[in-house]
Image (cartoon, rainbow, N blue to C red):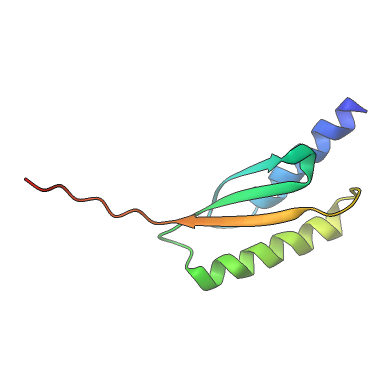
Length: 84
């Protein structure tokens, strides 16, 4: 039981990491949600929505799981400068 749970979480993160522009992925809430961090300079806002839908479709196709899984794509851009 525990092994199948851990494998499901690893498979969930592996699916997300298979997409270009993904920095990291975290399965949380016992595998009911996955948060995906993408590279802000390579992925624009529109493409982040596309990646989110594509990851959700791939999860539906490749994994079996109870209930539903929430897929969240996070894109962050930081601008840093120094006043001298």
